[in-house]
Image (tube, one colour):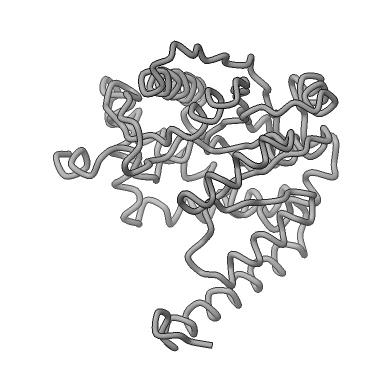
Amino acid sequence: MATPKHSYVSVFIWMLEAALFDGACALARLFPVDSVSDCGAWIFRLLGPRTRANRVAETNLRIAFPQASDAELKVLLKAQWTELGRSLAEFPLLHRIVADTQRLEVEGETMLREIAASGKPVVFISGHFSNFEMMAAAMMRAGLNCQITYRAMNNPYVDERVRRNRASYGVRLFAPKGLAGARELMRAIGRGESIALLNDQKFNGGVAAPIFGVMAHTAPGPSSYALRFGIPIVPLSVQRTGPGARFKVIVHEPMHLEDTGDREADIETGVRRINAFMEERILARPAEWFWVHRRWPNEVYRRR
């Protein structure tokens, strides 16, 4: 039912979007996984460059690779649209991908299982690398008790479908909002549960720390939780190994943040270390990052 906050027109548009989402998912499930992945790649290679998001992606690539030629940037733009198209097209088929052990390899799975067996929490962090859904699947496969945070979608009908699809392969989601969300995450850690956060997107009001030499506002949450509870940060990344929908999730060496007694400085140090990790991963496989997000302050995009 529409409310003063959400007009009947908004609700109608949401329902229409949800119906289109259902139709696309139903169509995708009629075909083999790799065929759907290839189709998504083809569609986004064709349509992506014609969208406004292409300008954002190009600006981001110029920030990260200032010495790259126009020809090199064109190749990277095409490659990132290909990867984004694959990842989005694969979403309705995640349960099939996760169930096929030949499609999901985990480098460092022993570490995940040891964390699960210890009953001691950690802060998992990662970024939007390739099909980042694979990281949550790897954690579930290792038997981790973990609160996986995410940003709820603006359309509540589509959001409900997304949550249900992720639940099909065992992922429990928690959408933190403000102080109440932070408290819930702290309670989860207190119960011995790990938490997992994507920490590579713009966070207004966050800590200003460089990534690719340009200051970017970054969520301080992972560093803050790690320092408050004296627990490590465990970075994860995912790579597409191909052909098609085949992936490797990598569990990287834990980060142990030093508590010097200056909490603000210690959090900033943690944020800088996390940004350095993100930058390293992006440079290693630039086509597989989510370039269409406005990672840097708005004035950076206005200037460029």
